[in-house]
Image 1 (tube, rainbow, N blue to C red):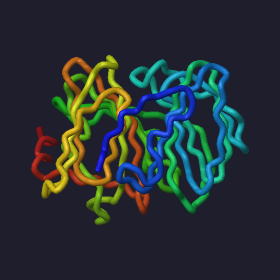
Image 2 (image 1 turned 180 degrees about the horizontal axis):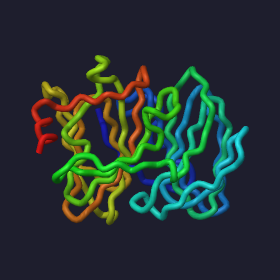
Image 3 (image 1 turned 30 degrees about the horizontal axis):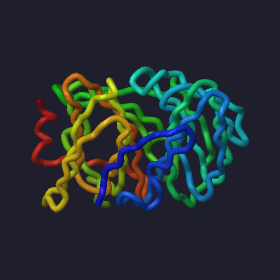
Length: 263
C-alpha cells in the first residue's frame, strides 16, 4: 500500500486525497489555490467539512451566516489558522482577496450540525513534549469542538526535533485506553527545500515503513505508530485530520518508548 503522495499543486482545486484511497475510508482532502478575485464554491452532500486557510486571505460565505474574511498569515509558520466548520448540506463559497491557499477536509456523516467560523483569537497553540521532541500544536476543530466525525489541527516541529513522539497510535477501538481513528498528514517545510523522516510501524512489524517527507507531501496513516522528525536546519509543519467510526480521541503510546515522557 502506498502511504505517501507528492502533491504538485496548481491553481484551482487539487484533489490530493479522494474517498477510499491510500488505505483510508473516512477522509478526503482538497488543497484549494486561488488567485486574487477567483472563487470556489460547492455544496457538501452527506459530508461535513473543515476549511483551513493555509496562507493568504479570502471572503467566505456560508448560507445562513454573515460572511467573514478569513486568513491573516503569509504562510503556515507565521500566525494562527482560521477557517470554518461546514455541516452536511452546507453551501459555501470562498473568494480570494489575495493569493489564497486553503485545505478542505471532508468526511461522510449522517448527522447534520450547524456550520461556524473559526477565528484566530479562538486558537490556543500548545507546546507539547520536551527535550528534542517538543512541538507546537494548534487545534482547528479539536475533540471538544462541535463536529460529527472530523478532528483537525496543525503541528509545527522545530529544527531537528521529533514530533508525534513518543510514538503513538489510534487503530483499535478499546476505550478508554485507545480509540479507532485513521489519520492523514499534509507537510510543509521552512525553508521549502527541507526534508524530514517519518516511520509508520506496528508492534509486530507487519507494517514498518520509513518515509522521506518533503514540502507538500501527503502521508496517510491507516494504522500503526507514526513519529516524525525534521532534518537539522529545517522546521516542519503538518496539517492533520483524524476520523473514524466514532468521534473519540485517545492515543496509545508505544510502551517501548513512553519512558521519555519522564525525562
